[in-house]
Amino acid sequence: MNNYPKIIGIGIDIIEVTRIASSCQKWVDRFEQRIYTQKERNYCGEPPLRYQRLAARFAAKEATFKALGTGLINGMQWTDIEVLPDELGKPIITLLNETKRYAETIGVSEQMITLSHTNDYAVANVILFGYPSTIKT
Image 1 (cartoon, rainbow, N blue to C red):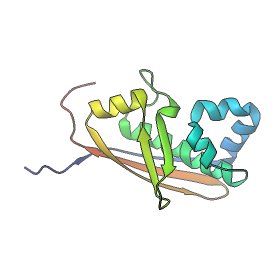
Image 2 (cartoon, rainbow, N blue to C red):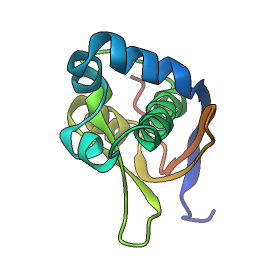
Image 3 (cartoon, one colour):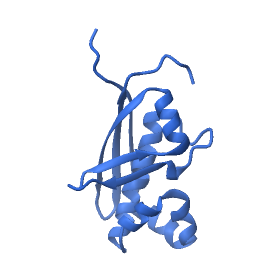
Image 4 (cartoon, rainbow, N blue to C red):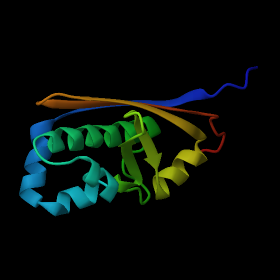
């Protein structure tokens, strides 16, 4: 038996950029504060690219919850998932708070993510790796 990490979950999501732009404009700061961390909001810059970047991060958060197999449960928040680029521009997921605790409980030790966006759509694919826990949650 090998000791390599296994795939624990895979998630994908696609969203129309106009849905995010409309929500940002309709609810002003309230929507962004509920969904995105301050670092994400700072990174996303100004419109119109801002809405594409926010949409990609929204898709990433949805894809992460799908990969975890949970959705928003047990105190998990949208802001528990932060997606920012590393020094080379590669997107990196940071899990925080209750979402991080849950991921650790089910054995997640690594995440991979890819993001893409156009003027109209944003998509994200997330793969969670680790050593699956025998603990039933």
